[in-house]
Length: 386
Image (cartoon, rainbow, N blue to C red; front, top):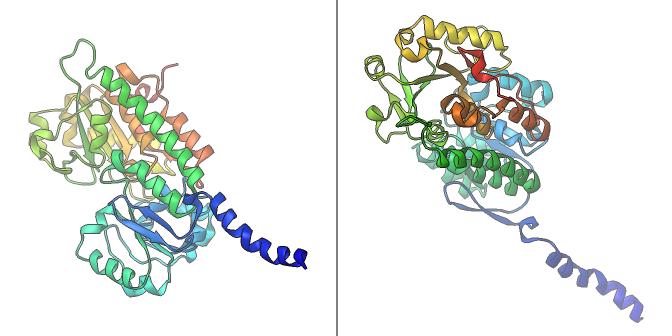
């Protein structure tokens, strides 16, 4: 009789002990804090996701081996803005073609009715979407329907928000171990840059750090949209450069400056950003699927066939091209190392961003980053010292 009672009670007694043995972070429901400081409770491990921007896949794929398997909907921005990255995902995960696309371009907001009809367990939006008039009704409707929404950011404040974004995704998707590993990898390399610049704020024998113009889409957009204090501009300060656009932009995150202003107060270094769309030969051609020769020729064309050819930095070969979407993915650490080598070669000639990218591909990326993501007029600028 007593044996039978013990057998019946054993599972009941074991359950609370098992709960006590389970770490708090491994339990559901789970409350997480997104990059806007919002506390959001997830009732269970999300099995279905809706991404406000499909470019978020580039970051999500660093901590999840098959992020496409979670998707019930996504924005159409990757197909539009970076089609070769979409092709790379398509080759690795053909099921991506069946994922409903809610928008057709960058910066669009999707229909709430469409979003709710897909029945996501979790919606992930980018921080820039939080303040738009179109987004507020989305948040209200999802809240009323019991669908949690998280905001992530590696674009507006990358130095502040990249690690919290990865940590948040790791907690929300039960991929904490992989997220922690990537954060360690990312922050170790960022700290190496920070500490060297802090100890050597300007090159030896020079009164100040070099002035750098970081120009978005030269040859594609009218000259010159320049990075300011936010987004990719944060990396100029990180690597020990002075932003040549500051006298015009002040504390703005970015904005337009005239060609006359650039020529009258020329930078020591010129860095343009670009992207690659097959069949489109406008501007700098950089990114997934581009070969090195094509990328280099595009930089030569942009700097020789436009008024930028009048800059001393261009004439001296101190002109470079960088993949535009380093500022929108968590592999921004690679872009930071590239910038560090160009801006402060006295401190960072030993860095090898290609090796850093190769390690990301080997250890983290569900879809490898394969292409040419940076180039220089002088190829020696991209070769690490050994």
